[in-house]
Each structure stands twice: as structure tokens, then as C-alpha cells.
Length: 168
Image (cartoon, rainbow, N blue to C red; front, side, top):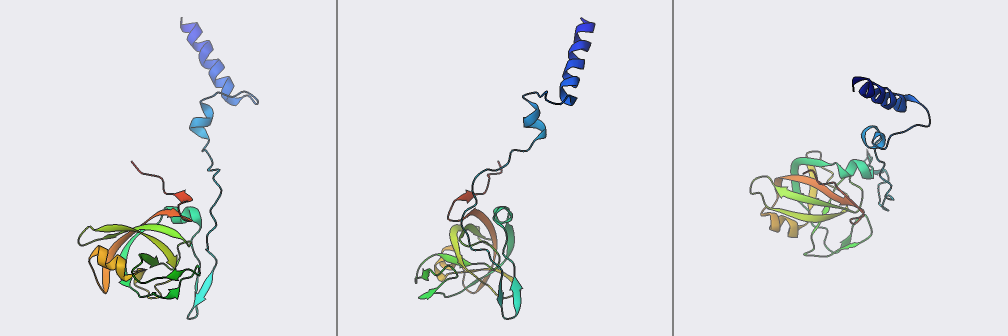
């Protein structure tokens, strides 16, 4: 019996190192599966505002983005966002300096725990302490006005084409 187990062990080890010989479990343990989904069409080209250059994130980097910081309310109503879309009064939208456009984020108020999902379709804020600008409708839903501490987490990039993997 002992000799049979040694022979089996030698065959298994030989299978790992011989070219052209593979085990079915080997790919699952040692080789990372590549994501073959096509990348969505997004706007993430470099740009400059007031002499400062901004380099937006790549899609995969954005899917891992989470930040806590200041949010401010901005009024983009009846203007056009960075994607050329009209920003109507009462709509829920946000602006971010480096996320690919469009993206969908969950914004959560640090003080009261309220949260909502918002489409990021504009550039800003161009204030060094702020991480996101939100429309008045988002601010009302989160229960603040002016400047407020929030947590921002990307849910998807490219209008839902690529979504963040759930961390269960």
C-alpha cells in the first residue's frame, strides 16, 4: 500500500513539471481568470481647468474606488454636463473630477446614514478639499445643504456595463 501511494505521488509531481501534461485543477489554483467583458465606452480623457491638469481613472481602477470626504451642492440646472447632457432642475446627478463618465455611485451621509444611487455625468468639484458635487435633489435626499461629509462608492461604470463585484 505504501509503495502505491509513493508511485501516485511521483506521478502527480511529474504531471506538474512535464511540458504538455496538465491537471484540471491546476488552472483554478495557479492561473487567474481574465475578465473578457468588453470595456464600456466612457469619457476618461485628460483635461485642464484653471491651469490644473486632471487625469481620470481607468475603468478597472474606478470599479474599486471608495472615498470619504466633503460633498457640496452645485446647481447645474439648465446647463449641459461634461457628457453634453442637459442637467434638468430636480434631477439627481453628481460631478467628480476623476471618475470615468458616466458612472453610478452610492453616496452615503456619514452623519445620518442616508444613501442614494446617483449618476455621475459632469466634472467637478474644483475645490481641493471636496470629493464630489451633488445636485440639490441629491442633497435633499441625503438631508443636507452646503457642505457635508459623505462616503462615495462606485457601483458601475459606463451606465451599468461593468459593475463592482460584491464583497460578501
